[in-house]
Image (tube, rainbow, N blue to C red; front, side):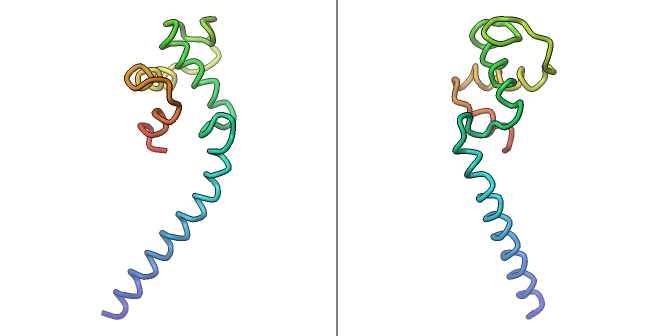
Length: 95
């Protein structure tokens, strides 16, 4: 019984430490200009917004073939349903 209790405490401790480490990494990312987005993620976001607003796979209505289509289509679906809030896609993506 003591071994079982020690294992549970150890598992909870690992979970809490992992949660804290992830939180310290995520907070600076959330504080950026585009929130969750890093690297080229913003490009996919703007393509999704262009799909919703203009019906064009591109940026600001100008077509592009520079990005793969699946994620902007996924993001455009959620933006069409719930609006332009950039956290909607991250929530439904499971970030």
